Image (tube, rainbow over all chains, first blue to last red; front, side):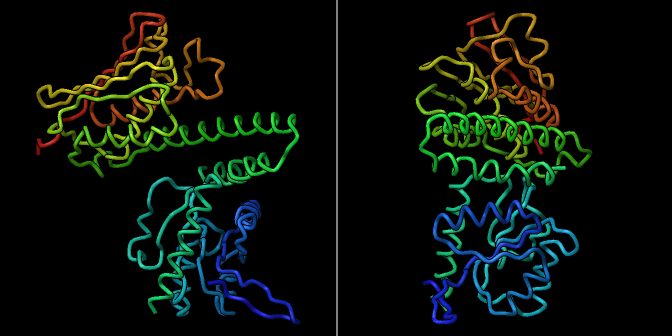
Length: 142
Length: 217
């Protein structure tokens, strides 16, 4: 199930994955990895950018970096919840930490997984495909 | 520090193999293989250095410790290593199923993973690594034996030191010199003792250690 939007007569594949990460090298890496698999992504450089894209209608898988300047990944999730923009989204955290973070407690319904940096291409792509399948499954249940 | 080291490693770990798969030119493939091998070595060093730092940090070391069935933990590690190990070297255990240890499960598995990976790395094709364990009063004594290249007497006192590499592995990029240091830290933080013995070059190596037995509280 791929959403499309029509713009000036052109059909554009609507991204179903949003990466929120302040590091350009990570944004470019993930854009290349998923792009090579035909998965179009939206990117956000921080919390405000992410919230703006959610307000503009993005719904899908959010890959959320934990450590960002200003508002970190966890605070960003609280803001998304506060703004009532969580519905229709699932979140996986991107982290350099090795162990599950206690700040995940209470957020299990929306934060479904962790991906630790550095990650290998195959495992990362498989994880994102799994999240997209889960998203379809959840959409089918609504 | 972990964030600052791991973030710039991510494009290298994830993208170099992708770039390698896109090139047809043989010399470029060779050079990219060299880069991938070096990046993997740095990645391993970073992970192990951060792990050593974590093990040395002043936290409540007893948190997250439970009674763990030793045979199950060992089997999980053996199973997880099968893909990487292939048929190079068989790992077999004879640990009684009723034997439990009081341990942090993740650290316990990491301990065996480091020991097995080290044993396999320095063992010839077709050889065997064995694991035995037995209750010894309030502790469980574990012995890991391999039929590998062994150690000389003057190497034995140093194998648990940070960045120590015995002579045959000194120039190998896939050896960080930190694996056995991590093993020692894990065992000692669990209140146990670890030691090494070897009859000499090509005589194999035996690592023995103790862990607190489970079911004591």
